[in-house]
Image (cartoon, rainbow, N blue to C red; front, top):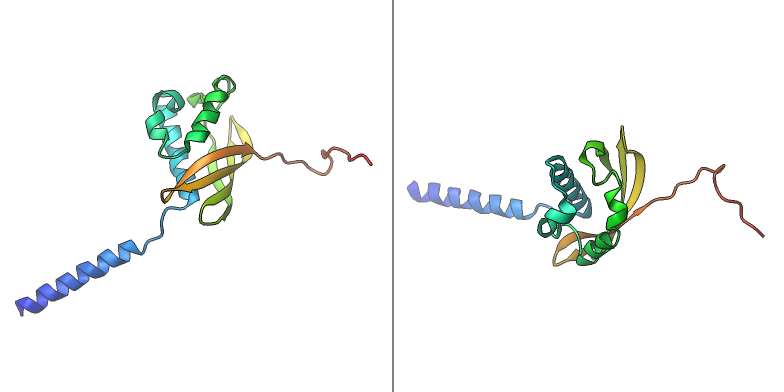
Length: 151
């Protein structure tokens, strides 16, 4: 009887381990959510993660993206993305386009102070992990705002 109980327990453990292994890998949207939550948490604790937490930041972004951030530092210093008091935006994932190596995720940021912004976040998969490689503001025009075409 004891042998059957051990075999049953062992079988249940193996099944549980297999089922947890069947869970999906984190997707590009998970990387964005995790990076955003971490970034906001750091800002709100009085830390500038772009300067003081670069090692931790590297888990979310590529080296190339860090270089781009360094090149834009003067522009970023004056932006609401550095000032925790004005950083109240909520993140929404709007669209995900991906293949095995790259992804584009359209996100929305909306906040009382920061207003509404749509961005495309470009990610690449490096050693099985999605990393942010670029972020671009999406220019949206209404029909009335579109520049006239000549010709």
